[in-house]
Image 1 (tube, rainbow, N blue to C red):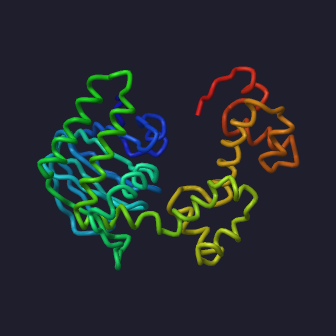
Image 2 (image 1 turned 30 degrees about the horizontal axis):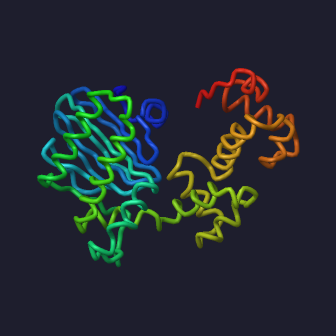
Length: 285
């Protein structure tokens, strides 16, 4: 698994190990490293393999945690971290798919009530239970073994990890709440094929925010303006259409009436024209 030595979002995208339902991120950070760490549209389980971290989550008081503990942070959290010593960390980023899959099967039996009050500054710091420690160790073994079905095994093990976290009230609040965050709702609306032609103002209205406030919060959360985010989604969809459609048909299908404009945007995003992408048949992103 590739080591990430900073908190760059670009590095995370490039070096994350992604399965169908989550991302795994492995960080190797030098002594005295200090920077702002962020979660985006999913909760993150932050663990330490070696070393320790001095952290402040969403402007909380500073505290130190070690490899005997974990932190579960909500989406859109900001965490200031300092490494008193060289530190290796493994982060689980749980997507909607695994949370929904586990929740639908165990929520009734666990008799978990939805959180009544929740602050975006909420986070959970906990020692490992006997079972979560075993599961965390199992994940490390899977990563080390490099089995050809590694991603399947990670998904399988992390289903139980999510289940164990749901049994902890503080963690369950974070896991359940994340889908109700207005920016997460907006991201799901943008990502739905049924809403391919929706406008930014319509989405702002849908999540109960003014256009200016929505645009500001969306940029703070995702590092993209809503318009930039929509463009990236449309271009990502266009790559799928280019496998079976002409460049012209793909442009129209993804909402671009101006073919030249579509080609310019595609080349800017992917470093090649749509036609070159079709000819190479390679997905660089």
